[in-house]
Length: 113
Ligand code: 5GP
Image (cartoon, rainbow, N blue to C red; front, side, top):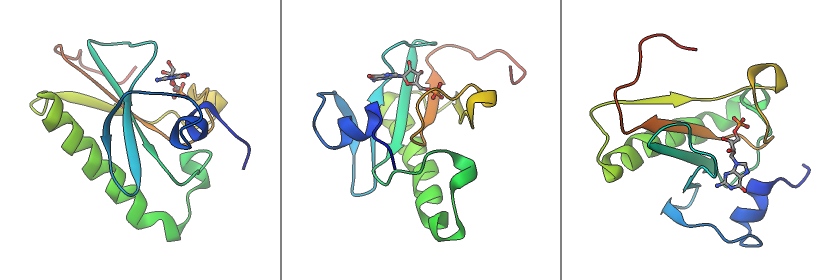
């Protein structure tokens, strides 16, 4: 697995303000926020992209979603937020270490794009 900016943050090689951390993941503010709240939930285990996840990653994937809900609650946006995973370059992914975007802090418009 090649190093990414996220694996360096997880390893402590690059400083980042962690909003949340547990045994399996961290949450940090996105450096280029697309909404008033834009947080990334990142597994410590490096999976390049969602489509690379295996059946053995099932518990981790569930843990990431539950962590999203926990972080949203912690940030006071539990009533409404959007969760996005960009998968692959064609899906807009730029950092090839799986991560979930939490976007919120204002009323999200309808639709997916
Ligand atoms: P992707 O496009 O891969 O789904 O999302 C990558 C996200 O990582 C982007 O929203 C980008 O702004 C964010 N990002 C890239 N480099 C850094 C960094 O060094 N620190 C933080 N906190 N976010 C980053």
